[in-house]
Length: 206
Image (tube, rainbow, N blue to C red):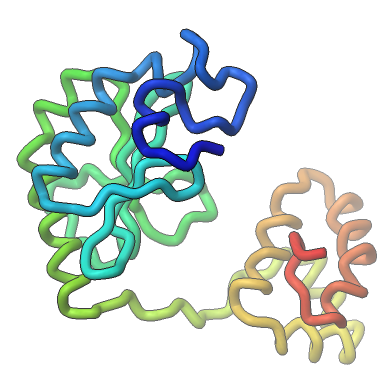
């Protein structure tokens, strides 16, 4: 991945084989990304590279990040649970995301249309950073797939180990199991996950 922010705007993020080619998503959306960059910089944000993408910071905290995909480019907000979103432009990037945190752009003209909104949102996020505010942690237990709930009911040791996991690790199993269409697949995955659960690990941890 890239380590210099200018490389993103001229070559891409470096995470795939389309890097530094005309087919790179960052190249395809170069004009729109440049306009979003200008808005972020006009908000007096510090520009750095994180995860191969331009990240904008204030008061030692990540505020927003730019990304590019084949069919869109985006501005994502950190700690979006604090954002008020009066214009209703924030969307969830996926079904398992807890809070809407992303603005999607599918036309360059959208950037100009939303410039005032984006600047207002960036300044709002800066205020929270100045105040040291963070969104409350979600400690609510996730809704368990039927197969996992049954497995925990039938095995008290497994249930004790599962409920001892952090909420994030519990959710990792729920997300993984919900990704399986068939009940038998979910049952098979639960058996494979047993050792990880007893080891206090999440579904994606080694």
